[in-house]
Image 1 (tube, one colour):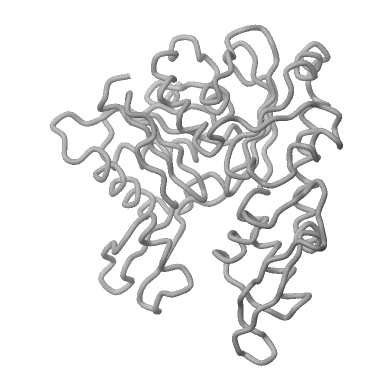
Image 2: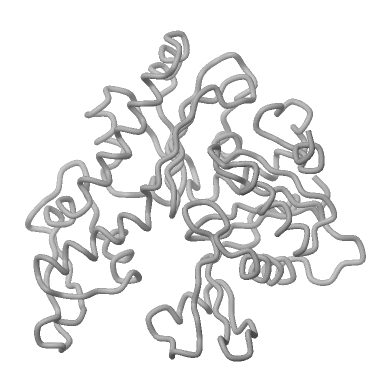
Length: 339
C-alpha cells in the first residue's frame, strides 16, 4: 500500500486512520464543533470532544456518524476533510481511501459514505466490511475454508459475523454498543440516585468500573453529577454490582446476537468456531469480564484481539494488498455503485 493511501475506520464514537507502512496515525473522537451563526467549523476530534456539555448555544457539538452510518452528510464531509488534511496535508496527488462499513449497510448509505470520501479529497474510494477488516487486523488468516467468528463492539453498533474464505458467511448487527451502554448507566444513576451525569462521566465509569463476570459490591468509585431534586452538585459511590445491573440488558442483547449468528451457521463452521474460539474487537471488547462471561454463557472460548480498538483500521493497511482475493468484503465503489 503506497504511503499516500489512507485507511479509515469511520466509527460512531471514534475515527481511526492509517497510512501505508506508518500504521495508525490518528485516533480521535468522531465529533465536530461548529458556529451555528457563521457555520464555520471550530474544532474536530479531541478538541471538539472536550466541548461536549460545556458549549454555549451558538456552538453545536455533533457526532455526524450515528449507529455506524453517516447521519449528516455536510458535517461528515467537513470532519473527514479536516482529518485528512491533518494527516496528509495538501498533496498534489490525491490519496486513495478505503473506508470500513458495517456489514448491514444499504446501497444508499454506502453511496453516502463514498460521496463523502470523494468530496473530502479522495482520488479513488474503496469500501471493506468491518468484520473482514477486523479479522485481518487481528492477524487471522481468513483465506482458508475455516470459520472464524468476530464480534466487533464499537460505539454505535455491534457487528457479529462468521468469516471464511475471504468473505462473510453470515452476520448480524445490532444497534447496541458503547454509546447505548453509556446511556444505560446515565439512566440507572438518574433513576436510583436522582443524579444527572454526562456521557463523558458515564464512559469513564464504564471503562474503570465494569466487571461483567464477577462483580464485587465492595469495589466502588465516586461519581459526580447534579442532584435533580436540589439542582446542586453531588457525589455518590457506585459499585461494580450496581454497574452490572445498569448494563445487564444491553450485554444480554450482545450475547443473543452471538447466539443468533451461531444458530444460523452451518454445522461445519460451528465446529471450526468451537475450535478457534470467538475473537472480540472494538472498544467494547475491553469491558471488564466480557470474555469469561461469553465463555460461561455460550460455552465457547473467547479472547480479545491485540490492540482491539485499532483492529478494524489496521485491517485496511493490509486490504489493498489483498483486494484481488477479498471478493466479498472489498468493493470498488465505481463498480459497486452502478452494477
